[in-house]
Image (tube, rainbow, N blue to C red; front, side, top):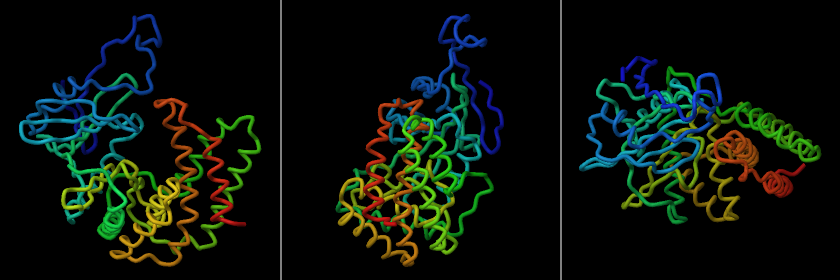
Length: 344
């Protein structure tokens, strides 16, 4: 095992054992894999010794777009994330820059833990390609409840305010119309083959949403670092009732109104917009008032978030399975929201 430089990170390369007989699958002897599960014992033995944490146990905690492992030591707890194939080292380093920036300004987030050589990212070679790993301190807390929503809104506002001067030299995708419209439509279209009416509606709605943003005009909306996935699972509430933000995997530069609208989208999907959105907005504006144009933009961004979520389900379907791609329900929801909130 020889560490080698990869950008600002170091790479630990663990070669996979052949999973099938040499004459099966590809010429390399390894049958093609889209998403493997890295061995917890291998992470404990091959990756974690590079850190000053003296880990005693490592277990898979959850699978999702990325895989998260629970790491224990004699007196502390950590998590190590294995990013999916396709997430590049510069993209990961941008996320870590954002976390370090926010942590330095007193925002409750989990900053990355450096290895002994100073690197923040380790890379292993999995059957499907390179997987990048980052160690984080574990943030204890309980799931968000409706009573915590106002405080959560305040935390999001603090993140936006604290990141107004954030910059990273590492390239990262932006939360722009290509990310929110073009890429989801490109992913969805093959799955609506034979459903011309549904596809025509979705494409027409996307055009109309673009026009609505243009007419605001969109240039007047505040832009900056956004979390990109403000939902119930990405926050822990401590014993003091203070929330801490988790999982910045979807972060990037974008419209702050879109970031705020993600919570409105979530509340609307739970049929709790009247209470949850009002509480979230009250907490947010107590810290960082929103302009009237940004509030109007949230209706458009709620629909765009739903479109993005449909596309994201397709993009992750290869790893998670296609059973969760319920386009009929998703399109029915969009049509209902279109009539109730967007109008002609």
